[in-house]
Every structure is written in structure tokens, then in C-alpha cells.
Length: 84
Image (tube, rainbow, N blue to C red; front, side, top):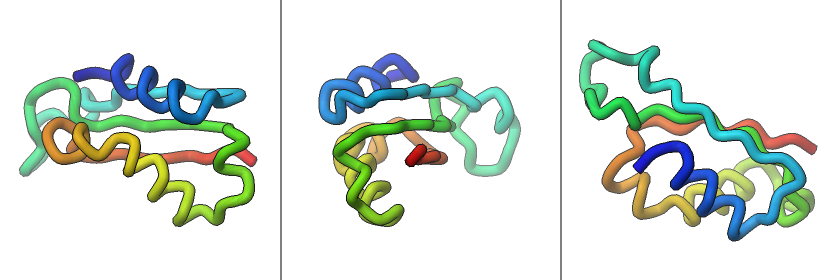
């Protein structure tokens, strides 16, 4: 599991106008409780019509629901930036 997996799942569901997934796991090496997999900390920036009429919390819930399996097993931290 890596950023391309996240990108593909989000792209297939949202068909966004803009989507960027960055792996920032390297910034957390050696931190307490941080997995050393190299694929655990991600930043998502997204602009999508499906999120336009949702408030920030509901938009984040929608994204988390798409990545539910990955959140349970691989992703330790996820930062979400939603562009209006």
C-alpha cells in the first residue's frame, strides 16, 4: 500500500478536478508509535464536486469511508486539505 493506492481509490470514487497524495512518512521516522513501513503518513489535497456541498467534517468522513480498509491496516496518519 502506498500513495498510488490511495490516489486510485479516491480518484475512482470522486473523479476530482484536482487530487494530490503525498507520502510524508519520512518525516516521522523514529517517532514513538510510528510504524516504520515507509507508507504510513499521508497528506491528501482534493477538489471534487461530490464534496462541494458537504461541510468539512462530512467531507472528511466520506474520504475516510473510501479508505476504510487502509485506515485499519496501513495508514497511521492522514491529513486532508479540501479545496473549495
